[in-house]
Amino acid sequence: MPTLRLALSQVNPSVGDLAGNADLVRRWSRRAADNGAQLVLFPEMTLTGYPVEDLVFRRSFVAASQAALRRLAADLAADGLGDLPVVVGYLDADGPPQVSSDAEPGRGARNAAAVLHRGEVLATYFKHHLPNYGVFDEDRYFVPGDTLTVVRVGGVDVALTICEDLWQAGGPFAAARQAGVGLVVTINGSPYELNKDDIRLPLVRRRAAEAGACVAYVNMVGAQDELVFEGDSMIVGADGTLLARAPQFVAHLLLHDVELPSSSKPASDDRELASRDGELADGMRIVRAEVGDVRPPAPGEVALGGIIEPAADEAEVWQALVLGLRDYVDKNRFPSVVLGLSGGIDSAVVAALAVDAVGPDRVVGVSLPSQHSSEHSRADAEDLAKRTGLDYRIEPIQPMVDTFLANMSLSGVAVENLQARVRGVILMALSNQEGHLVLTTGNKSELAVGYSTLYGDSVGGFNPIKDVWKTLVWRLAKWRNADAARRGETPPIPENSIGKPPSAELSPGQLDSDTLPDYDVLDPILIGYVDGDLGRAGLVEAGHDPAVIDRVLRMVDTAEYKRRQSAPGTKISMKAFGRDRRLPITNRWRENG
Image 1 (cartoon, rainbow, N blue to C red):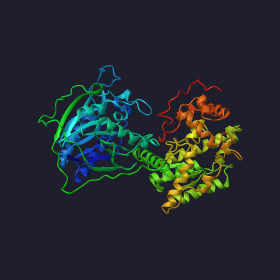
Image 2 (cartoon, rainbow, N blue to C red):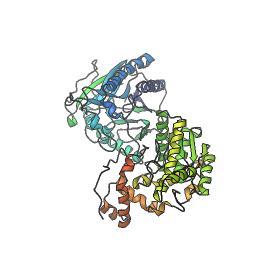
Image 3 (cartoon, one colour):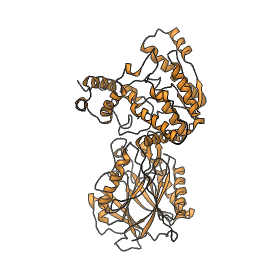
């Protein structure tokens, strides 16, 4: 049986940066070639970045992607890499956008993969299964392919697939079995969700069994707006054996030698070989191309990619949040970030995430005390600043609040919200003056029930913990401190911030529990209602108090207008506010008690 040295390039492209992404492909292809790779794989739409959303509808962008692909093929050959087959994802089109008046049935924009070889685009494949759920709107953008592309590399028939093709039975993987391939490569832009890595390996194993072939799964790493991609690339044998697995949340070149069955079909001088099978599963036809012989690695060398086990839940989420924040800051070219430090758990966790993401010299933490701010809160904010080394400032808000109250007659909640809005004004002023990105610090529980002040504590350009339930915020804080202690470092989050009862401190003696159920009671209801789409009956059946359910659901349903105006934040759950959960603001439906 022939052996192919596969190189799975787990890279971090940027949407719209065609030149930068092409350079990424060239640099990582050189690394792969220098390590004896015979086939190099890059993730879904690496050349354009992913997802490109409505850029698909700009014909200029599609044309630029097509031109960049051809240029990349030529540049790889000029780099001395022409003999190395490189699989790269890109945006293609064989007709006008489907939303245009001149659209043609069965033609349009394509989520595509190309095999680049000897300065040319040797073969292309168009994604067959188009996801249209959760964060995906690919039926809006793309036309599905109906052809399975099989490329012979070093005597092995290799089928090309893209992301969702793996997540659905039938179609390309069923066709790959009938085509008799030895390897199926699947290039992916699969966003992170907590525990998704537990699903992915069994899924790849099922598809390997369906295709009767080894599967090489390469996923991108990095973040794009709310989405974060964790990599977790892997190679699984036809018998389901995990052969190699890459780490999460870092760029990585996974090199591994794989024994694969040689093709049973005779070689041909023609690049395109006619399929002897004709129409295959799900109406897919086979198109064949041939790379021919590939340069063998140096004698005696063996490449073993190793198997990296996924991280524990808290470590995994922390890495996702750090990467999501870092890429949002760096890819949008913000020099630094600023946030309010209250001494509470949410701002402490956001500050620690920010320091881990961009370094303490790029993080400004501002204490914004009022007459209701406790001494321990001020001390805890200062303690965190000392622990992390961030730029710490104090801007008392009471004189500004008093000026408002001297000119307006306000009382009760209006005065509480005024304090929050003055804090928001100060943070935005610092942003305007010094160029920082303002980080807001509301967790998912607060967003769900509307426990925030619009244009006050909700103000900001990005929210790192937007998709993190309050109970998970505490778990993350404890994990981060324990991880620091394990490594002999100073825990970044003061124990007082973790242990004290949460409070907005907008009125004397105020606690979150004055308004909300305890978070240990609140979060399971919210998780069922928001993430699980359970109605009232389902929540009652799950064992929750009907009176508490009714109270919580009223708060959730009436806060949609606040959530619609909230800052973007990294998605870590199956249903994040924004991309995933889309409900009308004007909505009279209620889960009646």
